[in-house]
Image 1 (cartoon, rainbow, N blue to C red):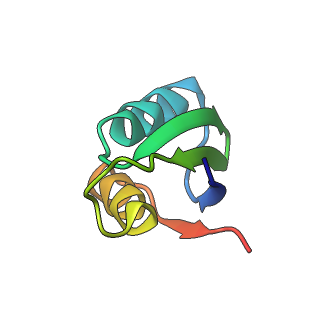
Image 2 (image 1 turned 90 degrees about the horizontal axis):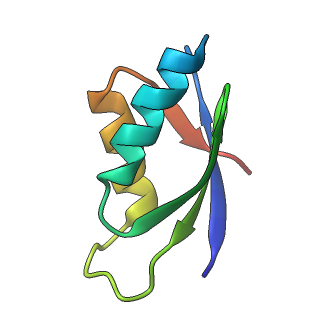
Length: 72
C-alpha cells in the first residue's frame, strides 16, 4: 500500500494525538500507521471507492480542528 505523511499544525499533547487518530481512523480509504506530534503517517487502502484519500484525510482533520498538508 502506498504511504504518505501529513504535516499537522496545532498538535500540542496526547489529547491532540488521540483526536487526530480518531479523525483519521474514521476516514475512508486510509489506514493509520502512526500519529505523532505534528505528523501522521498513513497508507492508502486499494480496495476503496474514495476518489482521493489524501484529500479526505485532510478534510477529516480540518473538521477536527487541525490544519494539515501533504509532506513533500
